Image (cartoon, one colour):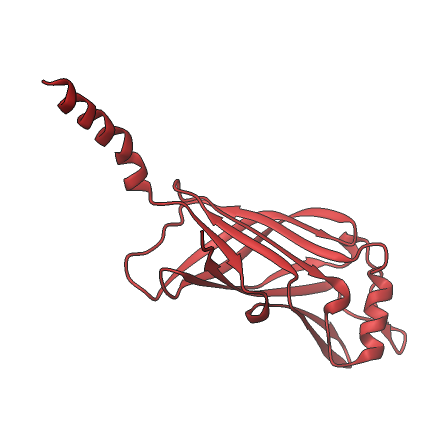
Amino acid sequence: MTVRRLALLTTLLVSLPALAQGTAKAYALKKDASTLTYRLNHPAHKVVGTAKPIAGKANLKADGTLQVMVVANVKDFDSENQNRDIHMQEVTEVAKYPTVEFKGAATGVTVPTTFPTKVPVTLKGQLDFHGVKQKVEVPVTVLFKSATEVTTDGSFTVSLESYKIERPSLLMVKVDDELVLEPRLVFEVESK
């Protein structure tokens, strides 16, 4: 075997694992197309507040590891009731804890060969809310709309009291402890 053939064979063998596992991709969050929604229940009514995230990114590594990070300003959540929003900002101490942040990862994710394709994924990570960091699992549906655009839709529940938040009340009755968070995020491949 010639030196040239040996070098070519070595290069091919080294590159095979990368080809089999996929190519790494970095995605930027499309902030204007993305939303974070919370839902709270009170015996008298249901509360829904929505905000646009202020930052976010996703990285899909060649080994199939998907990493996601999203940040939103707590004051940006709008329930279409200014008094309610002000009260929520008081109980979440928005001046002291201005943001809510999620960082998580999942494994076994690959870019499909045909589009659009939906992939169920569970992101395991940490939610930093009201100065408290807790582990959470976020089941999402990842929709690869094209080779360059991806959306995620999901829903998960947290306890207000576990994040040391005094539950807001109306007519001396507190809202349920359960807060449902629904991320709807749109990402696009970062241009180099």
